[in-house]
Amino acid sequence: MHKELTNEQVLKIIKANGNSKERLLSILLEIQKASGHNSVDEAWAKIVAQELHLPLTKVYNVLTFYAMFSTKHRGKYVIEICKSTPCKVTKSDEIVQMFEEELGINISETTPDNLFTLMHTGCVGACDIGPVAKIGERIYGNLTKEKISNIVSLYRKGDTNGINQAANF
Image (cartoon, rainbow, N blue to C red; front, side, top):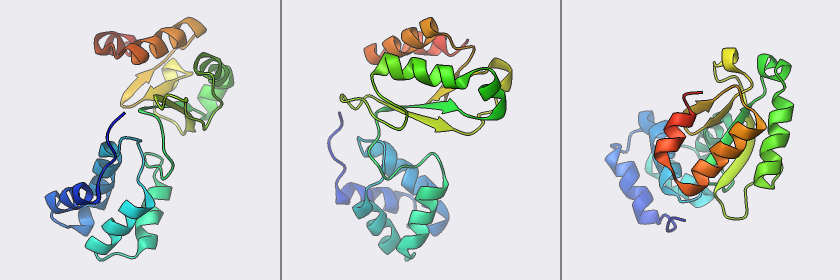
């Protein structure tokens, strides 16, 4: 895992974004990415609020409104299972169970090695290949137990070539 992000690094991220309130989303995304645990800690949210002259509640409103942010530590790879109606019809609940079995965790949990977090998400716009899972910016559709096992294995190995190919359904 990554080293813990320091307050000085958080300040550098803010400064690199011009200490601009308009860049709040970008700043928080950069902090989250650099955090090593895919989340924004309370201390960093306070620094952002202070440096941008924003109320802390405004920063937390952003962190809790957008699904891409988390204030809880998450795994390196966040697996988002679509829970929209089209995916429900194509059995997304079964896909959740398959991921839970493969990873040894329940939905909303993180694997002990901090590699994966499994969670629900809203529609990702890939209804034609449902049920789908999204990992980072990649969408995986027409999922089966075998595909899920293969995808998880590729991420565990860090096989970027395989990961890219698997995303091509």
